[in-house]
Image 1 (cartoon, rainbow, N blue to C red):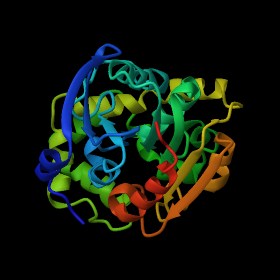
Image 2 (image 1 turned 90 degrees about the vertical axis):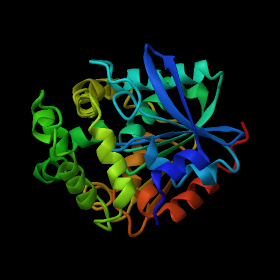
Image 3 (image 1 turned 90 degrees about the horizontal axis):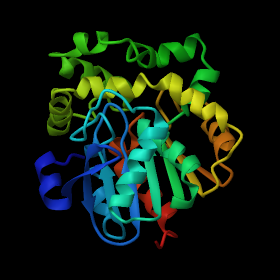
Length: 296
């Protein structure tokens, strides 16, 4: 299943930018109705939601920002701890005069979404976290096996070196990540792959993504403070059944039972780390079912 990037952009969504929390934020928007926010992961951009936005927009106002450091959003030198990235979202919503949302986060976006859920519970009706083991739990359960699977957590934190090694080879770097992380090694190919390559060849893009990881120590410290506080709103944890670093390595139902008190869990077969791109029909069905009660 493929969608040409230009077709997606021109036919289904609107581009917007506004200044919030001190940075210029870019976001995609489609549809009307109760607001649903989609936060992408690494190494992606808001384009990751190209299969979800047209379907969700039939019932909801869908907003998909590029996170700080990614895509067309600013890439400042600092501010990548998840508390501040959650504040990016809060300030974006304030500018849009949106008081309450349903929130969907994948990977890094799920980390931002989890912090948002704890810091701004009154703004959240329900939460979806996709293919994500919380940073605190990765750190707590670190082992040789976890280190092997999460090598990029370490590599991305090294100052300057990743940018120096990847620059000019963005296609090789992304091809390795997408092929290794997807059930179908070529799930991200053609125009979609080239879209991501172009995104990471923009000035500051590699540094922005690496800065997200360079905040890990601060993120873990923040998460330890309120580790005892469970997410209160209804939560759906969804993951790819076949990703070696998540569904194959962790008991995801148990992981998220530590995090949320009102929990539903779903494992997506024949999907790796990018279930929303690998199995969009199944993911869309799960999202629509879980979001059905959100009336704004």
